[in-house]
Length: 128
Image 1 (cartoon, rainbow, N blue to C red):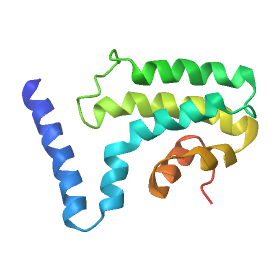
Image 2 (tube, rainbow, N blue to C red):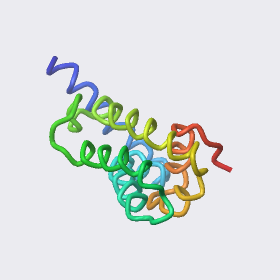
Image 3 (cartoon, one colour):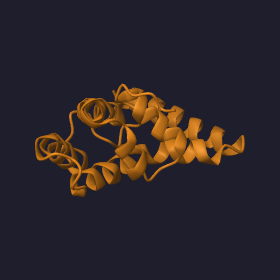
């Protein structure tokens, strides 16, 4: 178990370092900052008066889960630790996107455009 975790950590770190070495700093930042960017997005959507209250409840629950130290898969496990977060983000944002479109997400997204495209794909929206 520990060996597998170390292998995953090594691969993750290697991937981020390879992106940096290749001069793809934006992509490296996108990979490293995906979950924190999602937390900021959700916080901004919760505080936006244009989002109906019934759509905010799943966002509030999601924000609590993302900032909680208790996860289905701990966040310190690279890739797998973020996967459960990404799935829950996708489900909550899919509901919001279907109700109001992706424009609010575009407006509030704090991260790089590459990450926004990934979030919109997860939410079932076109990123154009």
